[in-house]
Structure formats: structure tokens, C-alpha cells
Length: 228
Image (cartoon, rainbow, N blue to C red; front, side, top):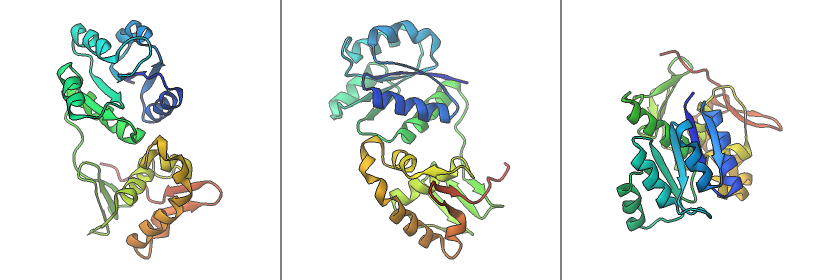
């Protein structure tokens, strides 16, 4: 179980990332302090580093990490200019995520960076469900049902990919908002039903069986994942 160190001074963001990382199978260490982060580096396989820390500038921590060796770092920051991105990458960051962000995307970036550093190629190609009825390709953001390519909006794609992460697991509307739109879209929860309705329409006559409603709870994928 790889260990991810989350260095972020905003508690809500820190806890949100911790939950998503643990759900994805990682062990998460969290701290709001740059000074404490430096003492925890030896326990981490990857660091998610906010550059805007209150005690130590994140770029100084990034330099320290880079000097230690090959510990991968994903920078998480509100500094979004091209110059900021270039500077962060020059200092040794493996990836650069700007706020606001989707926690599900951050988890995917963590997985990709760890794959690159382990020398193991990332899993390629579509994953199939329901004896091949549904196929989802994370790399190309495409999905097919009964052999037909689905014309999905980014939000519809995100919802389908989210429920397919753990087939049969029920996701609340709040969880789906956070997976698809990011933590800053808390007020977006009331519109999820409309997007699910549109997604089901594009899935055709069996749409309600593919993405199922669990009354009073949320939604789940109604197909099981096929074995490789």
C-alpha cells in the first residue's frame, strides 16, 4: 500500500484528499505544516505539496525533496500562471495541479506518477462491464454501450466513470459532485439528478438499469466488472 504525504494547510482540502486516497487504496499521511512535512518525507512514496504554506514556502520544500533523491511530488497550488507551472516543474515537481481541482483527478495523477516512477506501464485500454456491454476507456475519456460510442458531456462522462470505479457501490449525490466537479462545487449537488437523467437517455432503453437509483441514497453502476 503506497503512502502519500499530503502537505496542505486548508483542513477541508486535506481531509478531502485523504478520503479519496484511502478509498483508492493508498495510505495517507497529512500535515498542515511544512516543517513537519520535512520530518515525514522518509515515510512517503509520493508527496502532494501545497506551495502556499504558512510556515515554509512550498518551493523551498520542493528544493529539499529534490535534493534528497527521487521522491515524486505533485504540486497543489492556487498559483496558476504559466511561469508558476514552469518554475514548479523546473524545481523537480512531477506534476502540477491548480486549485480549484477535482479530487478524483488528483488520485488519477497520483496513480500515473507512481506508475512512471515504478517503471511499470500504466494500464491501457478500456475496462469492460456486464459481459462486454459497457466499455470505459479512462485514457481517452470514451465509453461504449453495446458497441456504440457514447456522445457524453464532460459531466456525464465523469458521472459514468465515477460509478464504474466500484461497480455496485452506492455513491451519494454529494460524493458524485466531489468526484466530478471538485470540492468547490458543493452547491452543485441539486443538479446531479438532471445530469443522471441526461446520461441515462444517452444510454438508451436500459439506461436506468446501467446507472441505477438507490432511493434515498444515490446511484450505482448496475453492471459487474468483467475479469481481464
